[in-house]
Every structure is written in structure tokens, then in C-alpha cells.
Length: 337
Image 1: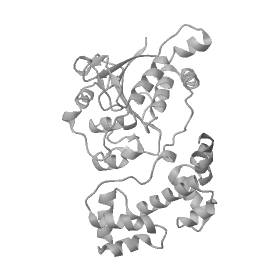
Image 2: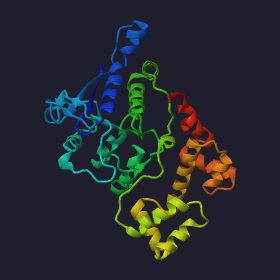
Image 3: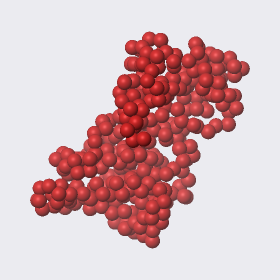
Image 4: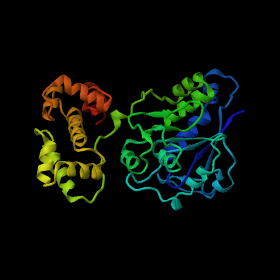
């Protein structure tokens, strides 16, 4: 008997996430049998879309979606999937504008497992089921989680998070992280062999657990602290100088402890972490756009000890400088232009 899966479809959802999940989950136990083995199909999941109404609307990507069921009279399901959502990475949700939140909160977690892809984790955090557990989401929403959902043990370095494979929430990170979530669901509920077959049919490469190589360590966080904004402007051009934190504090005219406190409040990072992030991002840019040696790149961003720079770069990004250049450097894309 196939497990019933409801994929949330609302005006905020991403079309690629909704339909990517739909297609891969529906295909589990069906497509390999049709394309390769000739065996009788045995679908793992019975998938439907659930949303605010069945009349249809344009989702966050602009694609028209007509859910199969409305929240108000939807059947119970074994699994509810919240796909990627087009949400602000800065402001907290207004529950009045997101009726899905009340519907999710009414689910009986003993009967229904709620999981999410990408920014769908925001809904799970808002209803409280991620409190105290490790979870991931798209890296650009890290600041929002730190500010509004501090009890979530956020791991934006991870591609997939769950405390128990058999029950409880599951979250996947990144815009195409729905593939990791789909693979998990197929493997857990349909068995490893079906997951292997799905990966082959859908050409879903193993990206590993890491989201770090794809993330930006610096994101624009709006704030109204003019002194900190001035410090950010200055450090953008002087991050390789000696004692940049001390110089920023000195230029601000604030006591060092006050400066550090206000800097963290405004940027969600300590001054030290912010500068490290700037240096690593500049190193990434140089690796992607120039042929400079790793030693020269490290020196350009303030690290004279090349082995130490390599270790630091890998610790923060999940890749060595050479691996980053291979994945994102000009040589990868030069044949496409």
C-alpha cells in the first residue's frame, strides 16, 4: 500500500521544488520498472498537492498551480512536505498571511511526518517542531534563523538533517536540496535499491552532505546602525590589514566591547567572523576569476602562511582552494561561451 504524501502548494512555493518533488516521488517504484526491468510497478508513494484552495493560483515562481485538496478539508497523510518558499530572508512571517502554518500546526505528529526542502524549513521553525533539533535550510536564510528561531540548532553547512531516520522532521538545504530530501524519502520508505534506481533515472548526483561550497559567507543584512555601516564600508577595502578589528573599533569612536556588541547585533556576526568571511569570499573570487597561485591568493587576502590558508579555507567552505577553483573557476564554464 503506497504511503500518502501531501506536498504543500501555496502562492509562496517554488515551482521547481513542488514539481521536482512530485515527479521524483511519484516515479519511485514505477519508472525503473517501465524503462528498464519490465516488472510490475509498485509505487512507493501516492502523491497529491494541498493548498489554500483548489481553484488555482500562481506560485512564487509565476507558474499556475491547482492543488488537489484544500487545507480546510484535506485528508490525513503519512507525510507532509513543505517545499522551497519565496520568502524574505530578513522579516518574520505574519501567520495571517500564511494559512498553511495553522494547518501544519494542527497535524497529529504521531500520524503525520512533516518534512521540508530549502526555505520550507521556515514554516517548520515557525510552528515549533524544529526547536532543539539540528536543521538546515538555504544558507541565505541563516541570519533570519539566528534572529527569530534561535532554539533551532541550525546547520547550513549540511545538505540534509534529521534526528531519527524513522520519525520526526527532516530538512534539506539549498534550492535544489529537494533532491536530497526526495532521495532520503525514497531510500527510507522504499528501500536503498529504489533510491539507487531513482538516482539513475533522474541523474541525481551525490553532492555529499555539504552545502558550504555553494554558500556565500557574507549576505546583506539590513540594519539602521550608521556607525556599523561605516565600519562595513571601510573594512570592505581594508580586510587584509593588520589588526582590522582594532582599527574598525578605533575609527568608530566606540569602546571595543560596545563596538563588538553593536556589530554582532547589526550583522549577526562578530567582527572577527565578519572579517574572516570577507577574506574567504575574496579568496573565492580570486580563485574563480584569476589564474593566481593558491599562495598568491592567500597572501592577497592577508594570509602569508599558505598551508594555514589552505586548512582555513577548507574548514570554512568544505573544499580546498584547488577543489573550489575546479568547481567554480573559469575553466569549467569557458567552453560554454
